[in-house]
Image (cartoon, rainbow, N blue to C red; front, side):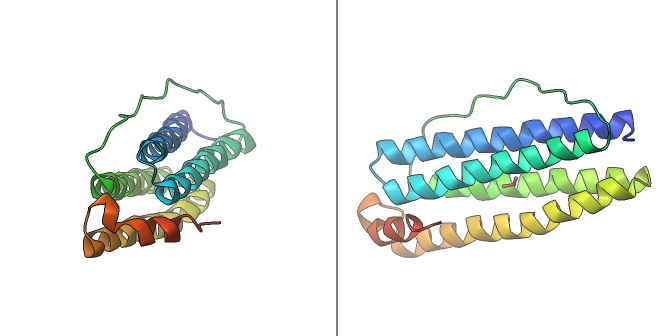
Length: 162
Ligand code: FEO
């Protein structure tokens, strides 16, 4: 059985993962409107992944006999100045999420909640990958130059994400 405080903290994280999904979907729509279909595709897949992250925690809460409490999802912004600005924000957002996961791990340790600690280790590993992906794409944008005309190859490459 989950403690009430852990149940609340995990429900909050479900909301944050769904917000991440919403944010990346908004970014995908921004690239669609700029006719950069590869970037749009990459972020669309990322948005789906975030939804699965939220659902993973959702399923865990239920498996532990906890209660689901779904709050309102904050509206993301809709416009960015450039591809580089989008990925600066993706990278910063992922670093923020890593901080949230680390706080949950600390919480599990404090409560001696071994099951939650174990479940959260998947997210600890996932965040290493999430930060690396965002920072790699940001670095590539900076190499070619943060200008739509220069990003054609990268757009093509990101469009291949399966
Ligand atoms: Fe669910 Fe991108 O971390």
